[in-house]
Length: 125
Image 1 (cartoon, one colour):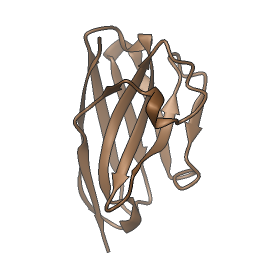
Image 2: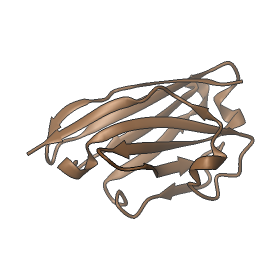
Image 3: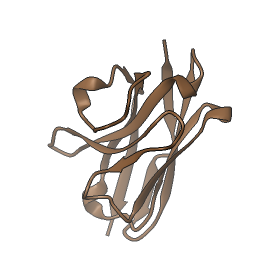
């Protein structure tokens, strides 16, 4: 059973960058399809990006394509989200999530069974 711990959130001005990390413990990270979700102010949680167990498949929400990059280092049991060209509309809580032996074919929230506690990202003008 996985435990997920995010870090790297913070405050940044519009146009800036942040890199989120999520450390997996309990089992090797390679056991899990992993993803980033976010909950923007006053909105439902939504998928941002996912990455398959050995990085062969990556999916992105249209709203972040070209600006965000998901990656993972299984040797370090760590998932990353590099966020560039941040905009105020990206402000919210970002969550790391995982599916054990999942195929990572979509960003369906209900399929993800393991979740981190979230990290706040705030983008100001």
